[in-house]
Image (cartoon, rainbow, N blue to C red; front, side, top):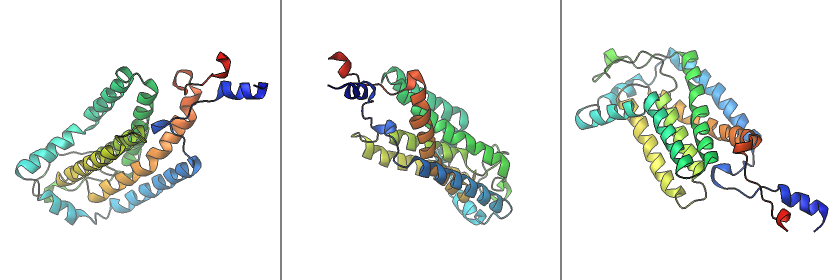
Length: 243
């Protein structure tokens, strides 16, 4: 084996799948995320004084009765910030401690956090009020006074579903998770609209946010940053050094 071949083999990282499969179009994904953030923020300001979807909010809130109302309120509480953080930490800890994969745990947790948390900045910047509880048939108790656009609950659940989908990419669980994740997103989105905690446009903007931002976050965090951190870098293959 020649010296150049030896050096190449000594530094070649094995091909990786799942969340570690490198993107073929990193700059395109990052540009798409930037454009989405700008557009979503602009739409938020436009909707702030024009609640065009208030009639739909009122209609959906009319469904908030009996068992369905109790269920949607429970969903809102379960995906609130503190429980959402706990859920993410527990799952990442399980991946690390039980699955013996710190890199995957950090990658998943980082994707969720860095996709989710910046949406709170846009929420404070836009400062759109929540649907008027006074005109709702079944107002949520206690009344939430923070801003409405985008929906942090929706951003979180979509970011979480996307991160797990990346983690399971190429595995036998990928298709099952696609179905389960879609159902989870639909349940959370419908629940917070039935609770009248968010306008439908809040929810739609949040879905677009996570779909656009999460892939760019994965590129920056997993493809670019993690390989530069010694204990998070991909394992290297050294077959030539053993010969």
